[in-house]
Amino acid sequence: MKIILCALSLGCFFTPSLEAQEDPRSRGTDRAHERGGPPPLLVPAGSGSDAKTGKASPPSPPPAFRPSPGVFGGPRPPAALRDPNLPRTASGRPNPPFLHDRAVAEVDGIPVRTDELNELVAYYQTFRPGSEDVLLRDAFQALVPLKVMEAAGADDIPAMRAKCGEAFEALCAEAPFEDVVAKYSDDSEAPTADGRYTFGREVAVQPFDRLAHIGPLEYLHGPFLTKYGYHILQVVGYQQGEQPKEDETEVRHVLVMYPVLKNLPEDDVRPWLAARVQACSIRILEPGIQGMIPPSLRGNLSVD
Image 1 (tube, helix red, strand yellow):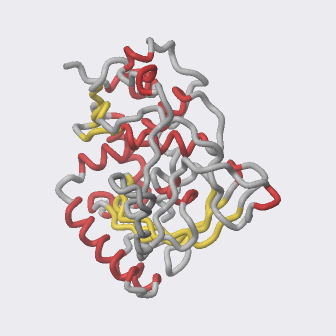
Image 2: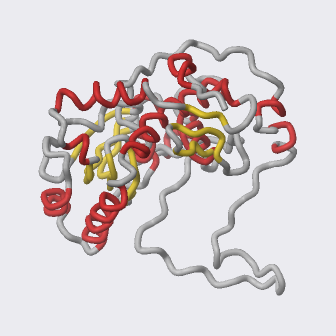
């Protein structure tokens, strides 16, 4: 059951532009103030110089796994120097829509945070056009099913995360990937014994899609949550297309699925999820954020 590969299955129909927006300050983002200067640069601990002495500090030891690079990268190398078999690096350093992490909305009581929206908007900006407002709306819509299931499966999440954590530890201890999949994964119809898929951008659910296209080869992502459950993902192959939107990634993964989804007949999973999304309650926490709500879900806004 290629259940992770359905990013467009829950009503992703977009109009070409948002309705007229209010002044940035009235939207709750206060962008005119926030963007008064360049975003701060994050310096890893143990690097650079000591703030008190001015002396260079020794570098930190390398982690067991390389940290996944963010989508805000440095300048892209010329095309002739890029390796087409490696994940594409982002060009430029665009300003994120929000400079401070906070909850701006709730879906069935689960917060939607600005860091999540920033990550998806930055990812979208690396391969497809669109105004920031449209990309924010797309990012919000991509997160709604995740939040709906996080609320519906709240009682199951601790055990699911613990099981996925055990699988992650086994992989870190260099257990064969196929053995870990056989023991822990609920994606029983993956095409290979190690849970392998090959796909392009915006085919998988978020954040599976984003992580599958930005991480270095062999890096383990996880455990992270999608609308289907907890995942571990490892990029094992990559092929850049002529355009970024044509890139393809090959991953292997482990899925610990929500029990309620695991117990449904395969053909009923997507309709069941779609019905839950259409019935969800969306609460806006900051004035002016209504523009992020897709037209198909604006009837779900709760009134305080």
